[in-house]
Length: 405
Image 1 (cartoon, helix red, strand yellow):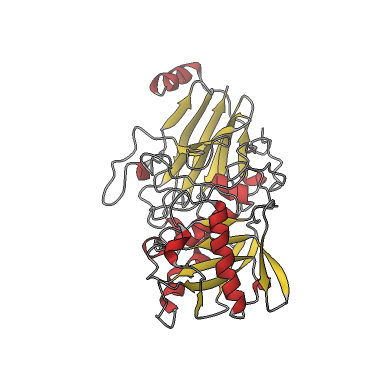
Image 2: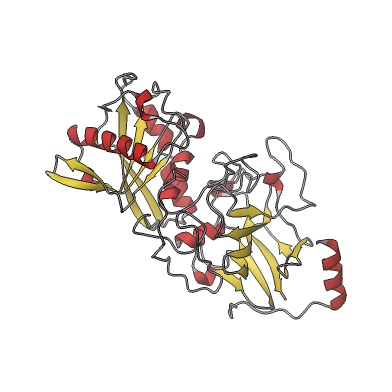
């Protein structure tokens, strides 16, 4: 329990009865996690998947810590069968540069993507674009070969690879065989070394985003999405069936082009952008009331109301407003979702709790994009013995009552 959140008196038995009646990434070898974001909260859940998941701990021998400035070398590549001819390469850079501001806003200024262009021309890949087997499900080893080829070519062109934490590898628009944009994440058991002529030494490559032609569809937010995998986040879209069945357009890891793509507050907490004292944690039978500041805004105050339901599951309530990265949100209010840190990437580690009384979608909004909860509405899970009631709302906050019995 969080002693800094004021407990509420128990609900009248009649109201309890009324409430009860109304609402019944690129695959790599798995390794155990051995580092944490420092959370001491009783509601911090441990991941069990061995790779990217929504667990509070992150293996920083494999992933990079989100906090601070990330020096990113942007490398342009072409191929014998897809020669790059367009110069200058301004259109390529301009398509991705917005990722910096987006991440700055999302992190409340705590994470900077410093995207640099050390060589403003094409470097030449050793194989045809069609020889890289660029399709979903291609192996980590195949991806490693591509990354090594690109960065070896960059080093041969004079780029000092040792100056960067990670790399963005951008192909010429004529390389249609390079379709999607996967993330390369190091495997300490199979290190990726590249000879760095500038220092006459080997450089260990930890992380890279290898863009495909889908960057022209998704724009700069694909860079934010893929970079988030290097921070340890899983995909929240579905790997089968309806891609948007779990979270709709509410999180960048679900739908990149969603109307409210800010990271869920749970993920901001995992990253360390939200601290334990901004999380109202209910892990034993009790009742709390918490005023939540809109997740889009900086400053102090509570951001999450969490009810822990097992060692790997919790319900979370957060306030979402139409501001900053969520300026185009289809709905505002309280978002409620369930986190399960034992669920693997692409299979719904976070799932929205849908509101049967949500407003109908309009324009380009989908039903999932409307799933906020308003004052007087509540959600209850009788099996988990929890309830979340929305008490009040204003332009920048929402107040919720959380119950566990």
